[in-house]
Image (cartoon, rainbow, N blue to C red; front, side):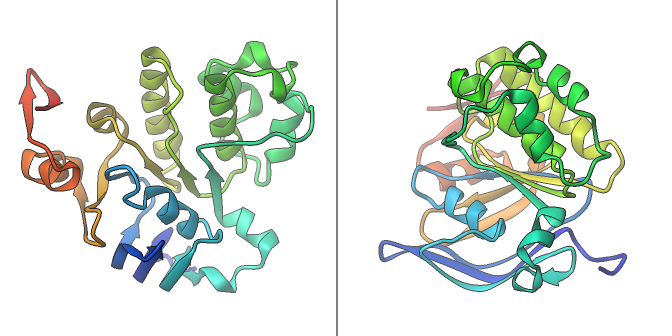
Length: 247
């Protein structure tokens, strides 16, 4: 990897599913220190895009994805865990491991934070000895975020990381993202989300999927605006007292 290589780069990436074009010719980079949120309507392709960026199977794709300056296809499976971590929206646990054991098994490159730090920061320290199959949806989701961070990869991909969280934990995770990525300036994060106001707290940049294959990308100040949100969601938006509302 050269010193100037982005952590993630999509080159003319196109994705199709069920006869629809989800993403057309995506040319996009993620640099160290950036926190991106992917927005779009339901079925716009957010989860499919994150799977493609993580190197997982998708219905149909063209173009290239690079991690740390190398084509995704050039990474051996074992080495891919060194480059990127992925937290899916839905998890299926097949073994009755304890939370502590699961997190220990998830660590590939120790150093960004300790298990104890992750447990405290995500408000799950009291669950360390509990079996993962005994957790609520929100608890399991926060454990998945801890797994993603503890893997130690510089590129972290998370699909709907606050979909099961109450407002207090949503705020906590937004703050955690900022510390997680800015701690040493070498990591970056890409997450999908729907809540525009949460995105303003959690992200530095936004990638918008328009639903017809089109896309746009830029800083939060540029992207969280009435014209962009109306194009993405198909409804009017207004800002009231610093809060964005669909109308």
